[in-house]
Length: 236
Image (tube, rainbow, N blue to C red; front, top):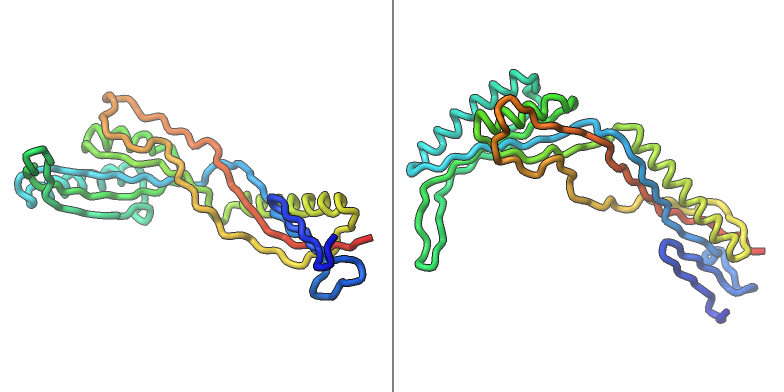
């Protein structure tokens, strides 16, 4: 042990101490660990994105085609019981489309597109909507993206499990250096790590056979929690 003190750093733990006789209140030995937990639960809701496109020589004709099918989509959502507050127009575009070749680009006409998002707390209509939107309206489908609500108790349970995991780790490290675990000094939830969404089907562009319904299963999804916690160490 050097006169300046000793710091041991492991993957998720930092143990700091000082040589005997040189301790000061602001240099008390501590151990900092990360507690983690991953639980699984059924999702509370799903998001689906429906896109209608049309390619015509005239931009007005392309937009009119999309507008007509958008009205039919609204009627379909009403029929399937998707509440108005659970759906939203997420974008409308009209632009000239080009084909790029070795001799240059050539215009293909004008492409119009309109996208609608729909939220489901009951997954049963999702398969029916996908099937009918693709067969009747030639729609493209993105999703479903399953979500576990922030209010779901599983998130608090994951937080408790992460905190308990941190305490177990700190206790083990303390025992490993012949010390006792003291009181908590600091406890911080680290910034959330943003991960990619989970999709049941990334894109459904082809029509399903008439009468068939797309099978949709919610399954269980992970809920992760983490916490950085610092304890005081009581050295023998």
